[in-house]
Structures are given as C-alpha cells and as structure tokens.
Length: 361
Image 1 (cartoon, one colour):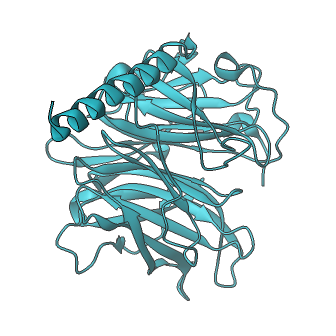
Image 2: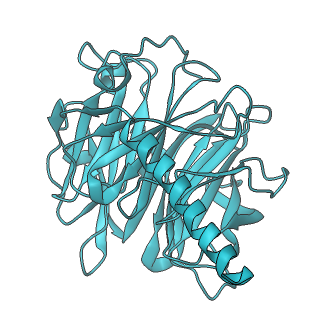
Image 3: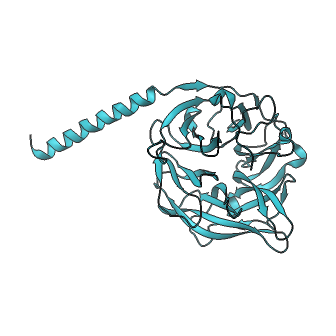
C-alpha cells in the first residue's frame, strides 16, 4: 500500500466516522409536532414573509403584516391581519412591485416630530426598500430607497432592522438574489429628513457568501447585537450587527440535518440574554431550534437542541414574539408562511412551554 493511498483511505474512514457521529446525534434530537391555532385569510398570489407589530397599549390589537410577492407579474402588496388571522382589508397596501421580506422596528427618531414605528420591506423589481409608518400603513419614503446602487447584482430580497440600544438609531440590513463572495449584505442608516420623508444612507458592506444558492432570510438580535442570515444549503452565518463593528464572521452553524434550504430565521427571547433561534428547514416543513445564548464555554457555538415539525408547506418566512397577546397566545405567537397563500399562527406554549417575563422595550 503506497503512502498516498493510505492517506486517502484514512481520510475516507475518518469522514465516515465523524459523519456517523453527527447523524447519530441528530437522530437523538427530540422532535415535537405542533399544529396551528388558526390560519390566516388568503392573499391574492403567494405569501412570503410575515412580521409582527406589537401594540404596546392594547396587545390584543397587535398586527400581523405579511408580503404577497404578486405572482408572475410581481404586482403584490402588504397584507395586514389581526391576531385571529382576519385580513384587515382597509389596511392592505397594494401595488408594491414584488415585495419580498419585511421587518418591524419601533421608535425611528423623527426630525423634531417625535418618533414613529415602521415596517420595511424589499421591493425586488425596483431595487428598493419601502418604509411604512405603523400602524397607519402609510408609505413615508417618497417612492422608495435605492439599494445596492452601482452593483451589477441587485434584486433585494431579505431585510432585517437593527436598533442600536445606545443611540436608538435604526438600520436596515438588506440581502439580494445574488452577490459577491464577500460584502453580500448592505447596511443602511434610516433617518427622517426635513419633510418627514425616511431616507437611507449606506454605512456598511459585509457578509460572506458560499456562492451556491442565495441569501434571503435575515434576523437581528437587538439586545445581544448580532445578525444572523441563511446561506441557503450551507448554514446560518453570524456577525455583529453594529455598523462600526468587526466584519469578522462569528459563527457558521446549522450546517447539517437540513433537507435542502436554510430559510426563515426568528428569535424567541425568554430573557434579555437567553432564548431560542428558529431556522426553517424549508423542504422538510420543520424548524430547527438552537440556543440564542450559545454554549457556556462559547457564546458563538449554537448546537441543535430540538426540531419543531409544523403543518406549513415549504415555509421560507417566519416571525416570533414572546409577549402576551391574549389567552390563546399568552406565551407569545409564532407566525409562518405556507405556500398555499396563507400564514399559520402557532401558540408558543406548544414549542417550549416557556414562561417569559421579558418587558417590551
């Protein structure tokens, strides 16, 4: 046996050994099947991504805001539902040119006119992000904010909003259909000008990309200051969210056990620093659960701890909150899109049996 062959054989056997350990570990992960409390009214074409707007004064009046990509023409819109899944038709915002992902932030600092709550969605066919004042569902961006200007690869898809807890400034982190291996995501400071129009200023380019498929789903942890995004078919990448922070990748996890695409990411907070990260295993109709705080020895090590099997069909967008909305959703609400033009609403008590006391900020 020559040396080269021996080395190759040893590497092959080593790979089998560790693959076996990995698969065996995954097979011992608990799987919990859950069923939705209710399913939303349908949209016109195809649902993609939900966001939850928490009503601080009256939680039962909170809103679920979801995108409809608009089918082949892309003439979709933003649909608004109450917490019973009923479409609040008068609040729908139609005519958005292929809206993709959407996120919510609270307290955008105005120009002498107080603060406003906002939702931001990507408008894929126009290479813009759109800013919507909440709960009015009023566009306040004068036609949209251009993103990825000067780039060959644009077509924005994913968006997540980061609020700097020290300055209260809000940033939009945006991904696209395709992009370079480095600097795939762009980060924009959102601000209101003298006329009350929300503008965006590019402050950062960051994020590694495998080059294999695309990056759509993004989630931000404001309290801990991290941003997570799904590099589809590869894993979940973790970076610091602040624009002045290091561009070094902190972690690449969720690399095994997924059927195909890594998709929607949402963060369930049980306290200021603890909770769970949920990642959609899209083609398997289930969500992989990781500890938000990581491990004791390494906060950037996120091991799979549970799998939640849902009734969604190829869900690539989801959101979760831990605040009480009503008796049915007393531990919070998980909303996930399903490709039958609906969003499914789940009670979090079936996921974690969690009793949270984290205050809304």
